[in-house]
Image 1 (cartoon, rainbow, N blue to C red):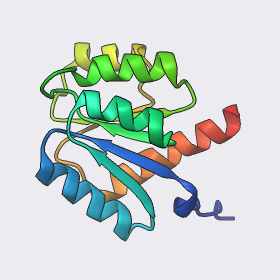
Image 2 (cartoon, helix red, strand yellow; image 1 turned 90 degrees about the horizontal axis):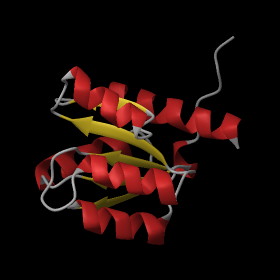
Image 3 (cartoon, one colour; image 1 turned 90 degrees about the vertical axis):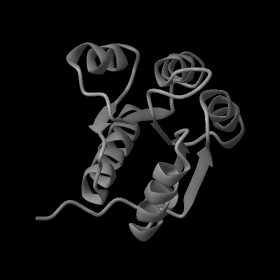
Image 4 (cartoon, helix red, strand yellow; image 1 turned 30 degrees about the vertical axis):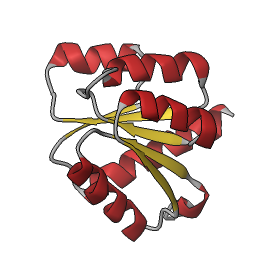
Amino acid sequence: MEAPKPDHKACKLLLVDDNATTRGMLHSLLVAEGFTSVREAGDGDAGLKMVAHFLPDVVCLDLFMPGKSGLEVLQEIHANFPSVGVLMITATSDRETVEACVRAGALGYIVKPFNAATVVAAIDRIMARRKHAG
């Protein structure tokens, strides 16, 4: 028997990446996959403000941005908003960086370039973990 399909309409997403093209592409593919509540921030500080205001279910977070790095943002989200799941989407794949992000609380890690299926599957896994934890 097939597992029930997740309700993407019920999931609030925040995309935090300094590259507007990457944010736009990710936003478009998520909307095409049925996500209806997708917001964007262009740097770590704006991302943290948006997390506090929007209270997303999942933050898709780049690692290298001007100002606060993705790792710093991840640590702050994890400390102050523990119910928010964080999915790292970055070009960096070295083991030390991946391990640092996981230790800091990332629930997923995708290396750019990404595809829709990989991102959606990772978000669905994070949402399932949050549902079982809460």
